[in-house]
Image (cartoon, rainbow, N blue to C red; front, side, top):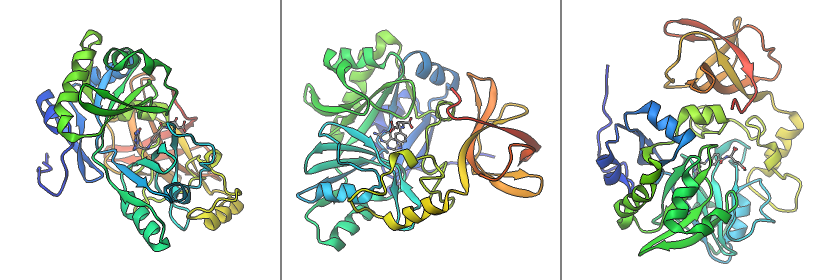
Amino acid sequence: MSYNIHIGPNIRQSAFFDATVAEGVRSFSVYNHMYIPGNFGDPDGEYHRLLHGVAMWDVAAQRQVELIGPDAARLAQYLTPRNLAGTKAGQGRYVPICDYDGWLINDPVLLKLAEDRFWLSIADSDLALWADAIARERGWQVRVFEPDVSPLAIQGPKAEAVISALLGEWVRELKYFWFRETKLGDIPLLVARSGWSKQGGFELYLQDRRFGSELWRAVKVAGQPYDIGPGAPNDIERLESGLISYGADMRRQSHAATPFEMGFAPLLDLDGAHDFVGKEALQALREQGAKRERSGFFIEGAPLSGNAAALPLWQADRHVGWLSEVAFSRRLERNIGVGLIACDASGDGLRIELDDGPRRLTRATLPFC
Ligand code: THG
């Protein structure tokens, strides 16, 4: 059976939409109410480029939520249990965001542009509505909105060569998650050393969507000597690397998880003087101790080609957790998966039920590679 998601006006097109269509994009998913390319029809080539060469990804669906004004820093801090005190202008930070009960509702990268200006580079949930409502209800002097910003990720071991050829040798000095504003001719950009892979790379935040195709072309030309090619955030590599996907691994509406369950405890500061949403709830959760933990798994049997929804994890007749995503690892030549499992479940006799029967699982530590 095959289905189509039709292209219509209630789902937004990225600034790079035309460019990816011209490149031969073969599937889209939807993320932050925007089409995001899924693949370009060459899974082996796309994976290989990410690990050994360089790939370019339309990740404009990683929308920015801008906070600007005298209370912008106050709001940024109030949104996350991570302590932002040491964060400098020009620095990015991975910031878990929780609701008032301590459930995760997003895991953005926070970019501090200035003392009174921030971007939250969000995962797939409506954080702008959340942040704006909090700021308004509190009467804070801060404007919350989604600016015209479209990230383009350049990932892989040869990304630094491409981006330095494009923008200058100075990009080699950028530290992980740090960024700088720059221009490529007339094209306004912000360049960061970041991206949703563990293969290294940069993200170019285009600040005017009219230049989408032009920027795509410029990166493609700079990348030609390195055999750059189009790709998309790669589920196999992210599972191998243990990167978290809000939406796949947890989502407040369907399979909620706390930062303790997801392994974010080292990022949190629950005892500082700063106030933030969910503080009491998170302190109470810490007292109780997490009942589930994030884990990797090896899955026996023939290669798996992914899953549409979380898979229940069984031990005999006890439901002990969920596998959020599975894939056949190219590097390990085994099926791998990530999920949440009850802390009091032993590692023995774990199984999932697939259409073609049960599969045995064993636990693995993250990252796999
Ligand atoms: N880049 C940008 N925006 C994003 C993402 C991104 N928005 C959506 C989504 N990805 C947000 N989620 C993540 C999840 C993981 C990481 C970044 C964003 C990540 N994690 C590293 C890790 O887990 O090893 C590093 C974490 C750390 O050092 O603190 O990079 O990719 N612009």
